[in-house]
Length: 90
Image (cartoon, rainbow, N blue to C red):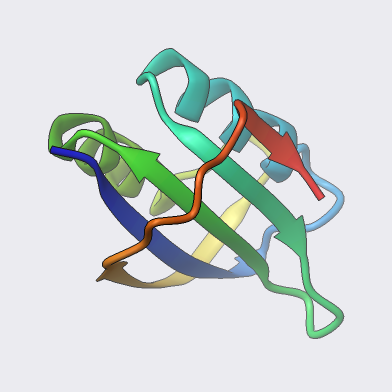
């Protein structure tokens, strides 16, 4: 069963390859969706896939790539019927 994860990540998460690393991590776990920078310095993402893949991505978000310093991850599961084609940066 496909589920959807909507998350906001704050800290030092822009300009440190966070979005590209999120794409790579999501694709490695068979997820589809998108990731983007927000004007307030956070990163937002929507990921859709199986529970295991979403749990793996959610765990990775609290660490992020090598240059990032994650302060907080706020996430929620949503019922989402939207279809995504791959995982992209928007």
